[in-house]
Image 1: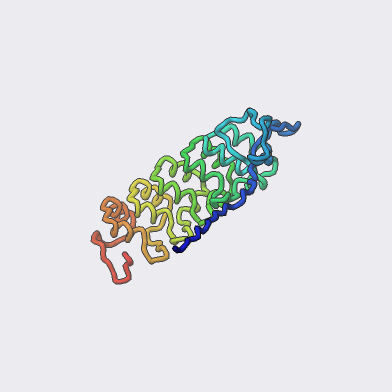
Image 2 (image 1 turned 60 degrees about the vertical axis):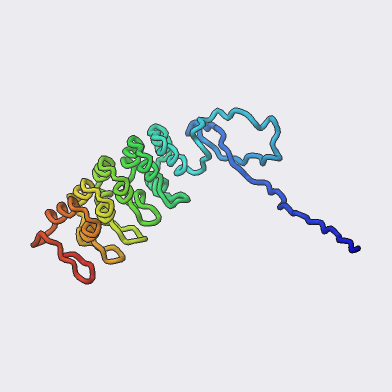
Length: 250
């Protein structure tokens, strides 16, 4: 009779690591009034009952660090007075522009959050403080016009184009595909937006990295109304599209 020895199996679990979390406290100084200050919170195994207390902060505000982050959060919630308060604390206009132009972890300046959240008051406020194009271009090369075009929001687009530094970007291309806002208008068939961009100098013959112009993209997408707008606006001696082997449309 043979005896079978039962083997024991062991399971190993990784040792729990303490995590560092951060929170906000209200602190007051004599110059700027109340400010939100970042501080380290205790890890779970360090906490005791005295750590759980009402901070008195608005629950909609999360962890903040730089002034750019504070403006970003205010922009999301369309908190125009908070944006004005933060920017008013800076007396140097160059410092204000650096704050507004700073890219966050997503590679975006704070004005993009007002735009994406459709926070109209915050957007207008930020536009009135911006003085250069660095504040309205993301790290990937997209401008606020690219975002407004993809959103299909003609009212926001018109608001943006009230400012000369935004109009200067009407043919600005992003880095991934080399596309200007008009390419996106043609792709998504935003006819009213395309018309507005053309009226502000957008070029129909600008090609992306694949050699496609907005006119070609409208044709390939079967967007008849868009094509009509393009052909009426462009200097084309014909009303029928001609496709060449290279896919250029002239």
